Amino acid sequence: MDPAHRRALKLAIGTALALLYSQWVNWGQAYITAVLTATILALPLPAPSLRTAGAITVALMIALLTGLCLLLPIHYMAAAGVILIGLGLFGIFYYGARGGSAIIVSFMTIGLAVVPALGSESIDGAVMISQSLVKAIVAGIGFVWIAHAIFPESPETKAQFAAMQAARARLPKPDRTPALEAALRGLFVTFPVLLFFLLVPETSKYLAVLIKSATLGQQANVGSTAKTAKSMMLSTLIGGLGSMILWAILRIWPSLIVYVLGILLAGLVLGRRVFAGKGLAPDGQMWSYAYVTLLVILGPAVVATPDSGDPADVRFSVRIAMFLVVTFYGILAVFLFDLFTGRLDRNARIADASSSAEASTASSG
Image (cartoon, rainbow, N blue to C red; front, side, top):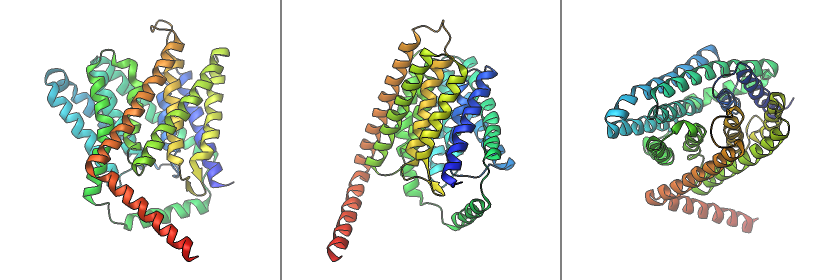
């Protein structure tokens, strides 16, 4: 089987099984298990070793514990608490920009963004979501292993990955200046949204939006200004459209089996766009973020209780609207950051140079 098709199957089946299990055991915010599982399976990596799984879990727990420890300054020294959260997010983005694990960056960003925001409303709520995230990552890694057991990587693919890892280890780390710039770019996208939710009441209603904002912080560094804006917007639109289709089906036939099969089908359709050959497709990250967006939009609507306020359709529509607002802000933030740091001009010069080189090649040919 082609490696890309095998990985798309792993993404779809692993995510669907994680969702089925978390819904079956009736965990609070059950969709988070599927989100974390999809985040791991959306990368062209072999099954994580026990050591890697432990490192991922410990990294998430460190972020969660840090968020819980920051609740005291948030409640009693708000300015100091906000500054510490910003420094923590900056450190996470800087670690990623210097070649750190994308999975660890994803999970630590979610942990450090979600816990203080929910804790600003209720410390008990922050503790509960921390417990949910720990359970979700442990179960998620288990379903990642199951997906890899069902569709194992070929020996050739494993050997090629080992060779790539060895070659990557010999490369020097990215320079500090570009890494600092990338970290600030991600912070500029994520932190103001988090600050807003620290100030508004009933933050727990916006957990899905906080997770989306955390993913946008990582998307902020997928490339040039135009490429980043395209990735942010298309991932939100595609994920939103997919969630609307599945939501319409679930309104007609509300069933856990239909829900899981819908997520499985979405994973198969979007997964084919995530992978190509032995790695990611050119726009693979955008399609993987679209799948995560679909999960994050649809999940809270499915687990909502009848006494949670407005009708389900209204809450669903409001959530999509808020995702679009956060995405538009992310695009604007990237544009302004690149404009004031001169990155926009550098991107334009690089594009002009590439166009000139292509024109010269065409004329000489």
